[in-house]
Every structure is written in structure tokens, then in C-alpha cells.
Image (cartoon, rainbow, N blue to C red; front, side):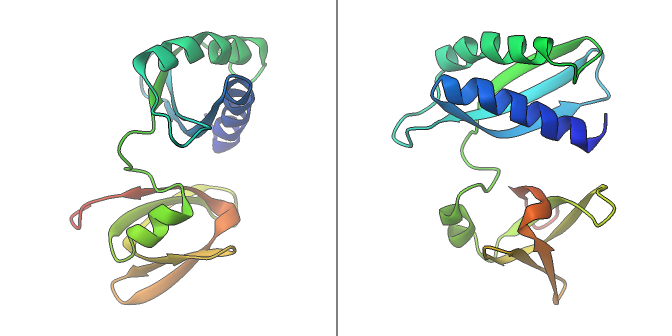
Length: 156
């Protein structure tokens, strides 16, 4: 499936999650699995609350129904709902401050709207750009094109 499908699914899942007090952090489609696997990472809208197993089970039904009622997916799929975990993905401004200088993998859309990845050291994030250092070369990626930023090890 193409990236626009993942964006549509994220919007559909987000609408179902918000009504129930959650927000979607990330969505990943595992295309090589049969059936298609859709993994949705969520967090509470209340930052003081942690996502529980019961929360994930609770959210499965409304998100699954929202996917089923849309025309976005036309094949069998499995749905996994999970918490955002301990922070592999940087999502908050605080995360970008905390992990400056750390190795990251940035998934983004290039000018042709094709999904690309770059690895480097996180330099910073502004309202407009994400800056990473790739072997001494500074790369700026427009924030509007960034899909996700994941912490990695220096070896990848």
C-alpha cells in the first residue's frame, strides 16, 4: 500500500481514538505479512495517564469498526493497538530537546511524495525544519514532510 493509505488510516484511527480520550502517535502497515498487519500506537490525551492493556483492548473495537466502515482498506487485515512505549519515536518537542546529538532515523516524504529515510545525529527541530547531521553534512527536512523520527543506535 502507498503512503497516502497510511495517512488516511492514521486520520481514521485518530478520529476514533480522540472520541475515546486517546490520540494516535503512529501507525505502521506491515505489507509483507498475510493478512496485512496494521499497528496503531496510542497514548492518553491526559499526559499523566499511561496506556494499559485494557485501554488497547477497549480501543480495538472502535478503530476496527472505523477501518471497516471506510473504503480505505480493501483486503483482510489484523489490527494491533499498543502504547507508544518508552520513547523509541520522538513525538514531543521535549523529546527533540532531550535527544539532541543522539542517532535517529527520519522517515519523510520527498518532493515526489515518496517515502524516504535518512539516518544521522539529531541537531534540532524548529517549527519549519528538522535538522540532522549526516557525517558532518547538515540536512534540513521540512517538518510538514516528516512522518516519524525514531531513536536508533549509532550502528543503525
